[in-house]
Amino acid sequence: KEEEVRFASKAFRRNNPHGSYRNYLYKRSGLYYDQIKTYIDLVPQENLYIELFDNLKAKPKKTLERLFTFLEVDTDFKPETTVHNASQKVKSAKLQYFIRQKVPQMRNSLGLPKGLLGNLPNRIMKMNTSSSDKKKQLMSSSNRSELESFFREDLEKTSQLINIDLSAWHNQS
Image (cartoon, rainbow, N blue to C red; front, side, top):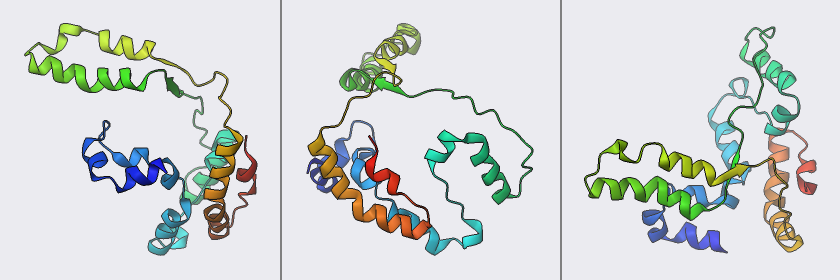
């Protein structure tokens, strides 16, 4: 419901704190069928490669080998697949926003030199994040049910469109 209100709100688009209101359309951006169908309609099939992130995460070397084969690149090339810049979870979005957006505005409006604060804003933002490796919060059963219902049709259409079994996505915890 909130997303529908955001999507329809011109004020939200204008005042979005991160500059791109579409970043807040979580559910809409997870509807893959229309997005993929557009590419399929515009790009010749022999130039289109679809791969699941799940595969890249589970078997990065094998997945990259398939991609290299599609691209007609040397499949003997073995790229480094070590994770860099692992996801971080922001503890306080308001603090992060304040430091990224408001501190520079305040500094500029006061005519203070850029280097005055040194690395302090970055250090505060770093302290305001934590590794996403920590225990994940479980979704309530009512939210899970609502989301499964919302995505079900699109997931089934997408699965047929790309000819990949996505049934495992129905029951992810």
